[in-house]
Image (cartoon, rainbow, N blue to C red; front, side):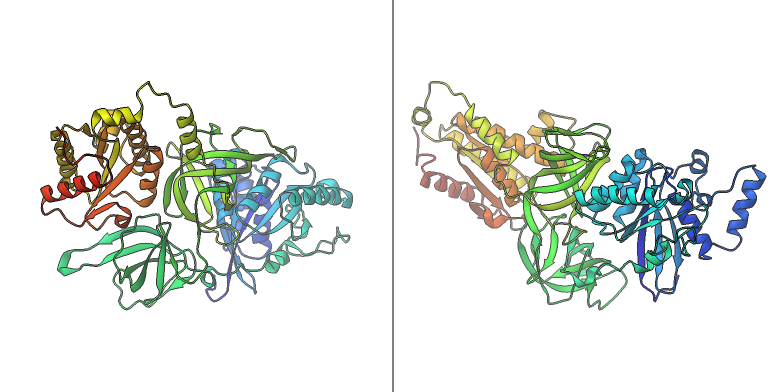
Length: 600
């Protein structure tokens, strides 16, 4: 394929047996795009096996596909016209392979949607239309195939156009053209049909040439999801390299950048690459790496943006269009994994707005779960705020998938940030406090007996045993003053309570939740509860504060390489004298009237 022509990716979709592969095979044959001898070889193979030839055989490369007569996986083919080069993706139409169809459609610039003239609009015809809309494919042409089976009847054509136009309108999109075709006979594929003089629109080939190339992402604001941060130490190399794949735009050395959702800022110092020197630009769609003039602590999953440009939104709640492919339904109250660009975060279904019944062309407003193959609109809530873009603005940072038990079970696009403040998490806190039952001892009486208030003290910062030892020494010092203190390490929460819960980003969120709930009990009992958690970011700190509500919390940061050291109540860059640090903390607790100056 010529490299100096523009490339257009086109997905062809439709209900099973509506003739997608036949149309595509015919298009390749009639445009002379097949390898030499390919068509003759397939025809000869069919003759030897006493099997009628079908143009679909040109696409269905897998043996089991030919034997079952359905396209299971995606087949890609290439051809060119004088205007441009094309990559055609033949996506499966069978309902069991909707996941594969979505994978193909997500990569496409435009789409051809095939409907059988004799069978008419089917359930998957509607599902595929809805999913194309959800995946942001804006240019769609509908091919009404097998028109020969209804004797090229214009009434059949008009009825399908009317009904499907009404359906597309209900989901907010429209088709550029409805083209009546016969894939098997080649009518309206590359040459206007003489059997349908009543149709004056384009052929399939002309429609492909009439599609416009979407705006190139290089013209949009810069987005680079951070995949990882690398630190080198050999040969006095002190670089910290931020790596990821650029989704849109470009940056150069000297550009000011901001990382979201942490909102940390720095400036591009250099563009890095393997075995290359003097790179001057990181741009879409390349995997890139940069160094920064100011070293900041960021985590994988952040999105690097250029200051002064349109920035992503930040929220833990957003309205989405969702399609569900899991065997088990998506239900409220269950934790799933949401993957958006390089972000990995726990998420749950907060609210269902409506579920589309594709077969009946109606919405179910009172449905309480997403069943397999359901599509609809809902609100997703993540365990911490993430950075994202509405898909109409940036597709790469507006699409997501849902994972359950290591399997992709759903996906969709973000429509907008959800404006309501009544999150599932806050609702849990409110419900917990509303039903919290205490005994006859008041907080004031408990404080008088204990000679101190309840307090949650969290040590965070670098991953070092010194931090944990310091937390334990504070516990000992408080105990020696006859104060009720208790230290518990974060490892107790996941090893002690759930030995099978491996420690990863998702379980970390659960461990922090458990520690916060436990702190609410311990501080409510009047204890000075102490723990140490590695590298808390500001969102995790806020979560602990809310979980410990209405009791107080103090955060102590050790070291200066943690994500949000500046948010800590006390900051110690290094541990030189543990006794001195403990005394400083004790003075702070005394100043806040948590503990007395001395106790007998």
